[in-house]
Image (tube, rainbow, N blue to C red; front, side, top):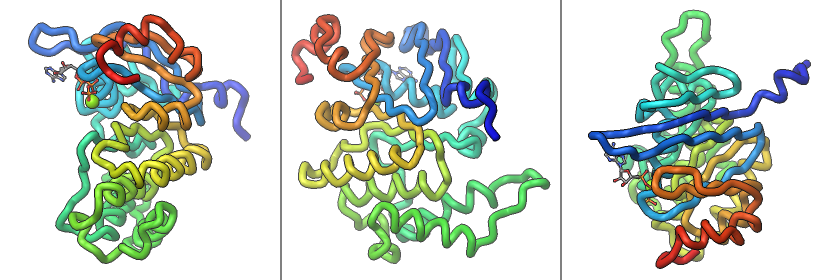
Length: 256
Ligand SMILES: Nc1ncnc2c1ncn2[C@@H]1O[C@H](COP(=O)(O)OP(=O)(O)OP(=O)(O)O)[C@@H](O)[C@H]1O
Ligand SMILES: [Mg+2]
């Protein structure tokens, strides 16, 4: 049984997070608690530091200040691959699938990496066929089962985005970091992808999603955080944040 104390541990606890590069402060003083099962939308003007924030969470960048805890575990010094073993899954602003591999192989590699990729002797490697089952289940979940044998490079942008989500499902990611999942997607595919991301969240996953498409953010997120010039400008429920005068000012010249 999960104790009350354990269930109150947030999925992510970020305190005093900062990052500078070449003497330039890119991100400063970011404090966020993300409860388990939350859906946090991250918005902000171009260059505000949103992707940098996700890079710090996933371990692609090393913070200059502050700390990140994943379900109570301090992530300092842990590599991106370890973080994904802990349940953190990441998609990128531009597609990151292996275009030469089939849709199925992309999903299976992800399932295999989660268990078979571990060098830890006490963890039983996931057999290939078990990884295959996990991969097929993930493809079915996102609606790509029929396309399993196609080269993934030949998929439409919308289907590539679906495959990226299937890769996270196959990896059994519990906390999804999505960087602009609607970028490059045809407008007809936006409702389908929105519904899919909502379903992944509805199954109990925690989601942090950077997205410029405001209707999508407002439709999915229970909390919106706004980054501006490397700082957290506002955080709260969608309606309150959108009505915030500082937020509107930060977006001057850009559609909110
Ligand atoms: N490693 C780095 N070294 C130097 N500058 C960087 C580095 N990473 C990011 N930057 C700069 O930091 C700022 C924030 O970039 P970031 O990509 O996080 O913004 P963003 O909010 O994701 O923007 P967009 O909406 O355009 O994707 C930008 O000015 C960028 O040029
Ligand atoms: Mg970005």
